[in-house]
Image (cartoon, rainbow, N blue to C red; front, top):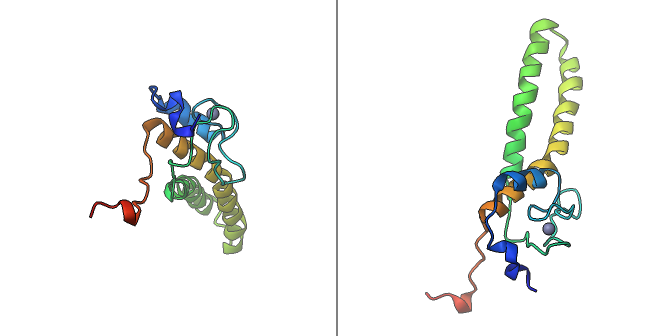
Length: 137
Ligand SMILES: [Zn+2]
């Protein structure tokens, strides 16, 4: 069976479990741990249920969401620490750079999986490029 012919492709899809499954690196369709083959490398399809992941491209959305989330965590902490303790600048650098980098690296695959899950549930596919010989113009 081709990936595009999978029966789940026409079924009703709820975006909430798809988001949670994607967040944990699982297939948005069946929940098997098949969404990623490496840290951020998405599998072309689920090895269990054959749901195709290739048409669902997160592009830069996960990076934007991670910047938004990490900024909303780190900036208030920076301001609170500065207000309460007024540490030296090197203390700020020693605290916030590793925290920001760690949070970003930790959140990126989770947010990417969640974005892929929602794209899959809402059937938001990346348009395929039109080949020159098939273009009607
Ligand atoms: Zn699956």
